[in-house]
Length: 258
Image 1 (spheres, rainbow, N blue to C red):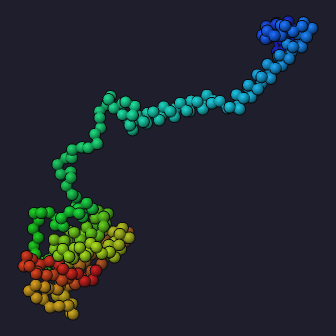
Image 2 (cartoon, rainbow, N blue to C red; image 1 turned 180 degrees about the horizontal axis):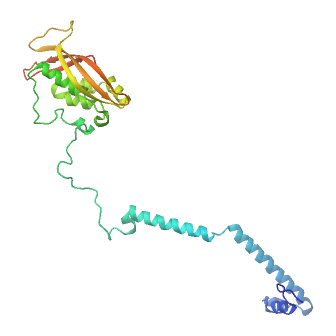
């Protein structure tokens, strides 16, 4: 009795009878036709096995891999639509985003301490009144503005120079902005911000020229508070020369001790 998973002789005969043979086998003599059919079936079996091996060698995409690729492609399509609406023709369905916007009143005004103000006019504003009548007052104001520094907002050491520029001669402003400032570098390395609490102005040290109607020297002693990685207070002593050559007012023309 045949097992359940084995074909019966009748089933094998039916399977062989239904097998499609080429027409040239029918022309083979009957006594050799059985061998020809067996050879043909063996050739078909070898070709089928070779085809299966070739398909496996090519490693077709599995369903899971195909699903991942489809998800990635859809994700790229969504991202492209969000980042470049016009790329997929989506800009005609939504609100168009323009590259420019009208600023609100005052939005373009320079902010205090903004590095962009370093290229502006040295004075704080065109209408600001600068008192240049008293040399002591000029020395106090110039030193206070020059030593008040905020590197993150100022950008570089030329910003405090330009804040003090209304009280300085153009040549001094040019000289200070063109020179390195060790005090600025020290402040930056400490991550600090300096403010001036007091400035005392008195007679200059001995050895400096005496006062004249056109030139005077003063000693300015500033107390500077620094807040940074380390908080400390230091005293800066500067010898300040001021001139009034054209009679328009006193301006700082030289600073010794920087």
